[in-house]
Length: 115
Image 1 (cartoon, one colour):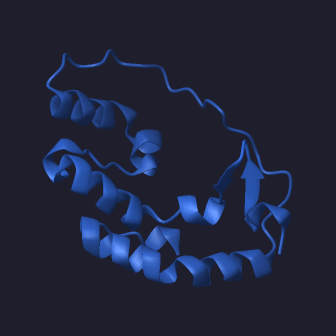
Image 2 (cartoon, one colour; image 1 turned 60 degrees about the vertical axis):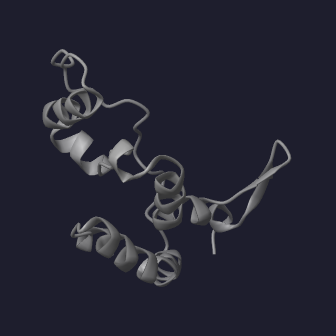
């Protein structure tokens, strides 16, 4: 397993890429604090593929003026230095299998592209 999958310490706080991928728990915590009506959940893929539509949803949700049309720009994007190892892909698929199914149920989304 590559080192990026292992938990690490940073500034004294424990963090893990795996834990940050457990969106159901994060959403349930947000909703318990703010209620569902105050949290807009959008897939990041939509921001990449339909930026104008997503920004319109955000401005409507926040009851603010629409955002200006932005030029398509890739920010903080770079190619991977190497493809993911098959063993890592298999590990992640197994690790997140139930999480993805739970998130699909929670949000009513089709996340088959995440498998």
